Length: 141
Image 1 (cartoon, helix red, strand yellow):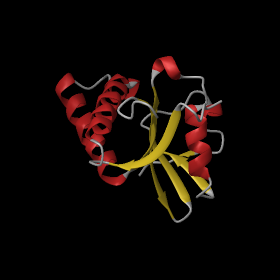
Image 2 (image 1 turned 45 degrees about the vertical axis):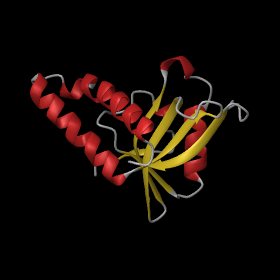
Image 3 (image 1 turned 180 degrees about the vertical axis):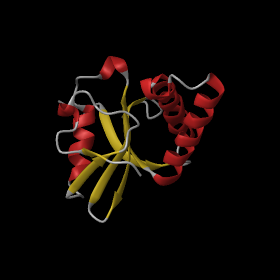
Image 4 (image 1 turned 120 degrees about the vertical axis):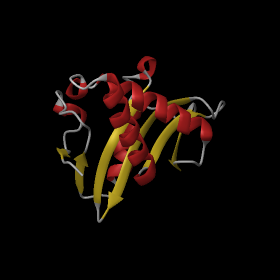
């Protein structure tokens, strides 16, 4: 369960908060460079692809960000998404390792799903555990 007294969720756009922008880029690159789908590429090409995808997401997405109320530069989680014609597209989600299992990701999805009727994820990998996103279908954009 999300502790409302400690955590605050806010929607940000790229460039609005430099500390968050840095947090997003670092976590995104860590995830993307380790994706099994890209391991056959050489290091330089994999880095180029990851940087391009990171820039794409920053350009088109909004971010539902969970951060510490007392320390607003401490981020616990984010969800990168777009909403279009009652469709929610989830492009990236991240929860710091030590804070997984507290419902931060689920809380973000519950809030975002209120504005949509259809749900899609565009992650570069197929989810092995569908229970993370039970109402979502994989779609490429």
